[in-house]
Picture 1 (cartoon, rainbow, N blue to C red):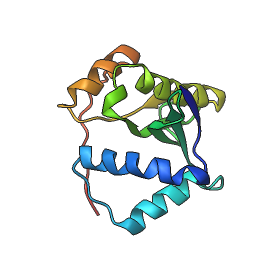
Picture 2: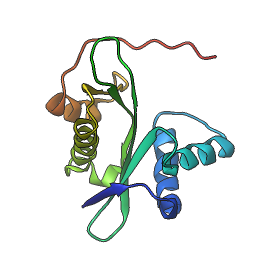
Picture 3: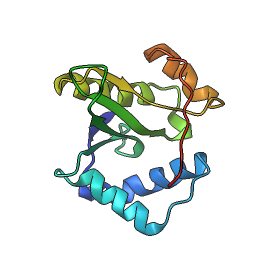
Length: 146
């Protein structure tokens, strides 16, 4: 498996993964929002980062997107792992763990105090992995759509 930064040339490989991710979370975004998201992910001037995982045959099998923000609880920024997706056929092979490790390595190199993420409470498959690589903080997530 190879993991590297997402590039403009990866669009056609990233898009089906992104659409599958949205479907998994029962989320609908416009084509314009998806285009904006990809553009931001590959724009070095925009403060969101992305990596794409490929298997030994070069097939795109997963992605991770992350960003940083200041924190009132630490000197360094926090790193928020916003999106993580691995194709169902490679789940349990270490791809998700490797994508999380990519973010953690990047965060350490950039002076972050912590990497954190959210998932749905019923996402049992992912939570098995998350419980192995991170601590469940017990926080409950609330949101106000604006």
